[in-house]
Amino acid sequence: MAKSGVKARKVERVALAYSGGLDTSIIIPWLRESYGCEVVAMIGDVGQGDDYEGLRKKALATGASQVYVEDLREEFIAGYLWKALQAGAVYEGKYLLGTSLARPALAKRQVQVALATGADALAHGCTGKGNDQVRFELAYKALAPHLAVIAPWREWNIKSREDAMGYARRHNVPVPATRKDPYSRDQNIWHLSHEGGVLETKLGEPPEDAWKITASPRRAPDEETEVSIAFEAGVPAAVNGKKIGPIQILETLNRLAGENGVGRTDLVENRFVGIKSHGAYETPAGTLLHAAHHELEALALDRDTWHFKQGVALRYAELVYFGQWFTPLREALDSFVEMTQRNVTGTVTLGLYKGNVRVLDRASPHSLYDTSIGGFTMGADYDQKDAEGFINILGLPIRMAAARKGAPKLRRSRPAGRRPAQ
Image 1: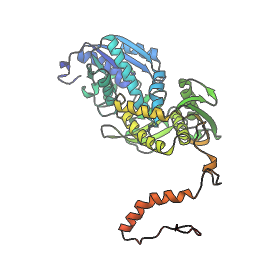
Image 2: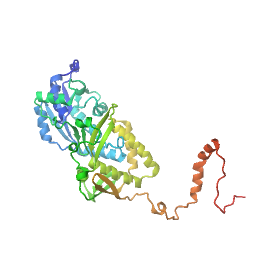
Image 3: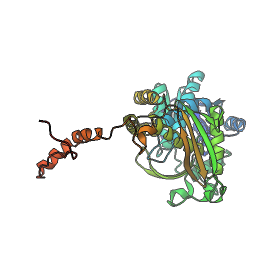
């Protein structure tokens, strides 16, 4: 039951972000009981591979008045995944932001459904301890600040997944979570995350049965698999020489990487609310794409731009993780990133072997690597004598600091045979 005072907010129709998992499965009957409102369920297909017709029927059977099933895969990839990939956004050096990037895409379509159906409130199934509540609700504030927000986990008396499963049984709501498989999972075409269960108490290697879309590196093929990935202006365009669409690119790379045990991450992360959490993430295609994209940038970007962009990547990852997608700063950073990607075109070949990825080859028509000056054999384009001047200029503050510390003042050295000017 809802806490006292919840009904003070009168709502007629609520648009719910519905996944069919444990939390959102019980939210439909809870909303109807607690608010006496109509519930419109929005199911967003971001590549999780669910039985969407089954979910639609389930939502209707548990009390939804309308159900919208929205195919968001192309929009999710082009408008969110590719942007984060171009930015090089990785949270805390390991997390490739699979769930974080899906939330603004889902929230945006949920708001669109709410406005189209005349809903006066939005609801989600995120807990009051996690990051997703922030991601959904900051998107709501950016896109539809006039709509009320209902967050059941912050209102009801349910305290645990066991309580939620008990509520589901009492209301005859079928849910996927069981005491035998208690993990909370989130899947889309980019990744599959696992939280809860033994992961809450075990900080060592996750149990093998937690992983679902990647083979154990110990049981992966004994021969290396080669895969080439082509980019055009920082956007994946082809796999193994064949141009295919973005959905097919991710599906193909997920399969190849998954078969070779590539893409597993065991991560203790800092949530937005300040809590550390332990999770297991599988991001097969994303692992390959980030590795390949990094190699092309190493070829095509000048030093100062690439180094500055690495700082941008850290900030971009934080914005995504903290739910600040629909912000002026993220849009401004996109403009910078887009400019840096104009010459990030070429092909990278990777070798996949038992969970590892190594670079086999890289090539770009915009490569800044020049063998005439990059090799040990000295060509006419580089005069070694020029190095003395810039070293002396760069070293001037260092020499002055040394002098202040009492170091003896040394005269500048001159090559043998050179005489000072008369």
